[in-house]
Image 1 (cartoon, rainbow, N blue to C red):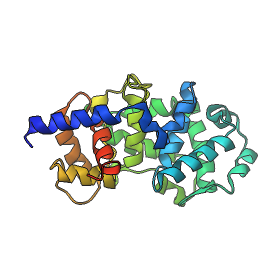
Image 2 (image 1 turned 180 degrees about the vertical axis):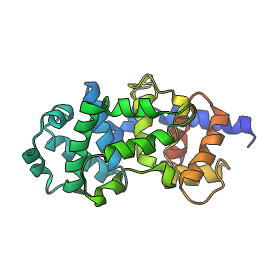
Image 3 (image 1 turned 45 degrees about the horizontal axis):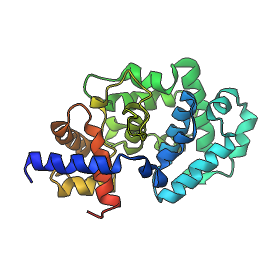
Image 4 (image 1 turned 90 degrees about the vertical axis):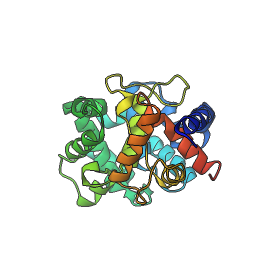
Length: 254
């Protein structure tokens, strides 16, 4: 395909998959259960954190998280006492367990008390063209409290070579406009032009077949390559193509 043909093809797929029915089998349905900004942010961050593996399992366990937080994640985070974290002891999603969850709740409270919340950190440390250094800074701040070493693996660092799929997905949810009722558009001070496509096995494989990506690994260098090519197709909203690449890979086995 020529560049024009590729853009036309992918734009059509964006329209097809950037639709509320997309939420039926996606972890993004979890924050859509809430209306309060902070509830949306916190539930989205936690759901995206455990978004690897079987999608049904991700949704089920993210729902359990909301149960454990009394379906009021912001109130729970801000009002919890250390003893309240005991209820997380039996929670597990793959390698993310109750110890990790307890620290995440403690750290999220610290973000809201001392750093302007989740939005505040990413907005403060964003750079002119990309959010990747801000993700690295976010990890540094997120783990400024005493923590177990095991927990740090659950927040990726692009500056150490990670494609940071889950945080890039979380940022897409928070920043892209909600005109189709899928993403939220809550964070107005970050431009969608700075977002990166959540790079996983599906988006990577489709990207390679469409010659948007040559590198075989799914790492930070691959993400930079994919970013560059998606920005050529739409410099204003490049990450909209996540819907096309993911939809082609998961639903059409492209």
